[in-house]
Image (cartoon, rainbow, N blue to C red):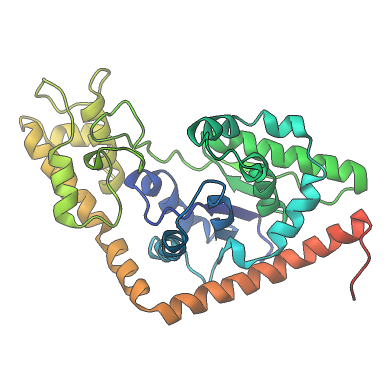
Length: 332
């Protein structure tokens, strides 16, 4: 790989991404490929910390992989793979776990949240998965990790683990830094614009999935919650319109002043239709490319197999050195 800084990022295999995932994160990954060495991963091992239907997990993993490619991840420029295909992540996770304190893991806010949400299955994987997340990053000695607000604590833990390992065994791991991208717009629920758009929302009209067809997207936007006023402008107290303007701006590149001017004197119905059409047209190339990739299962398999081989070669060098540092006997 060229001598550039290395970025690592993983995404859970939820099958399809929301418009919020896409605008806030995934579409920003493709431009990074020209400036950095990028390693992207579908983290299926993380997914099983909560109960999964094996058939759905398998399909969701393949769909997530194909979607990343459809959103612009180029397998010739980046390493793109499925986490469970690369054994070094689990191997390094054990060693890092032996360099992580119980108290550190018990303070993880996501563990507390998920334990409450899945009270009938508080398994040890749910407790230790931040260590596996650290292994994902440190297996490549990544310089940078794109993180959202909810992952900052996990990155801080990865840095602490790396620092502790370095103090015990000599400097080896880089301390990964958060990569703060240009702020991807925060997309809110179409039915409750005070909440973030989420797939787990019980109301299907609240969320746009990037594989929704054009008619579905337009229908959901037509039903979007607004307010009792008629003016299309961005200001406090107009959460619904503010959200629609944010989305429209994200897919058209127009700023709020231009949007206000474009829709001056027009009603909310016209605006909601325009937002729906703009989003559907913007996502059409992604939907088409996803359909093409999904139909070519042999090509998809070639891509994820080669991606795993590249990831294993890269990470094996690092993990072999870690094995030596902790005192394991060389196998060869």
